[in-house]
Image (cartoon, rainbow, N blue to C red; front, side):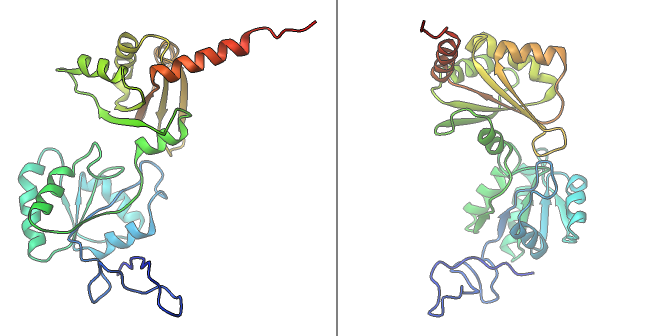
Length: 271
């Protein structure tokens, strides 16, 4: 199935053109590699364009072919698959680039979310660009952006950190993030969330405001808001499960919120 890109210069009859500037004579994109976001939970969170692209390419590179198989089967996508993950991407990127140089059109997907964002993708994109191939990234699901939008923390300036280093440099990096004058977005696994909250308490102080978003777009989606100390106690009382995004407010925003709360608690004057 062909993909039709929008053309911002409409013909005289004001009907949109079937071909965009980056399409070939058959109306297909001239790109060789497509980065296709996949749902982070709900299977309906995928675009029509993504489905068309996955059907139209010659090969789909998957982080896990079994996991991706569930999504592809759901949408009756029968395009051949190949594995491309953290353990083989250094070796396989060159092979996939060779395939694209021979004319094969390829899509890259991960288990959930946008390829290259805390998932495999960077090495293949870099290799493709260096080989002179066109890369096209489709917009779509990303857990950090979804969590940030619903966090009720400032979104005008933020830092997406992703996963912290597991050991070396972790404490130093946390202290640097604690001093950032913006919202910081982290990914963490559920079995390490208790450790992270303790480390945040050491780096930021127990009163720093934090939001934990878990199971985004799934049945048990939940947003927990409070201080580091409050959420640490909550996680100890009832262990958190599922995919987790942690958002840390800046010190300035936290102080402003605490000041506002104290003002709200002050007794009003009057007779």
